Image (cartoon, rainbow, N blue to C red; front, side, top):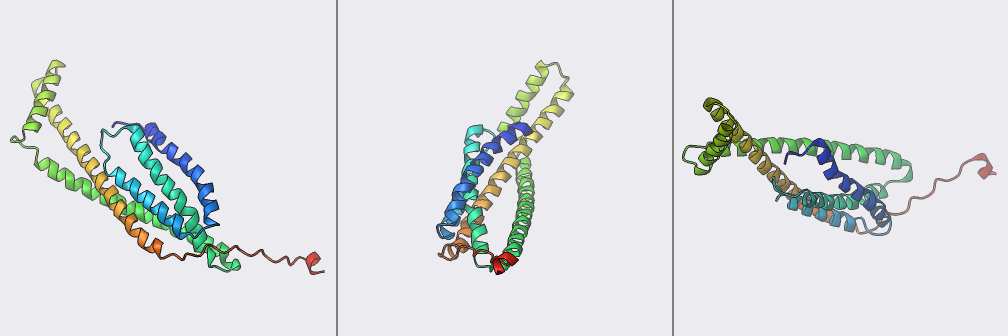
Length: 227
């Protein structure tokens, strides 16, 4: 859609504010209910967001895309506090700090692997669709020839020489093919993520029903207390 970096940031800003609102609510919920329930609900909501984003294209309104992203952030906001609580609930008090560090490390490493694998998949699907669309741009393709004629006519009206018209028209066609392939690759990536999070519901269901036990206070071993 030709959006600038500022426009893309504005697209994600409401989603960030949404997470800031959801985190305290889900954090309080994590102390009162079984972690399985908010985790499964959050994962399902995020999968729904990815499923909605499989419909994205260059004509998707800015507001609609923002709402789809916000839905996903609501799901993440429900999942993260409960995962943190569930992962540390079974640890003895003296291992809480090590467990928290290990949990953060695994989360960061998993995010890095996930982003890289998704980027590789996106690049491969972009190349796949680009090759397929390029092969269809022949003289027998009526839509392609009409587009080239329209672009060449506009360039002729602008005063460009005939040789330049052809080169610019084919360059414009190549850009359209690439952006179309890129959009289709994003759709496939969101489709893949949808199924990844749907399957994530299986291990989420296996989480115990018990809510996290409260952490016992550290005993006071100061000299004053000993007396």
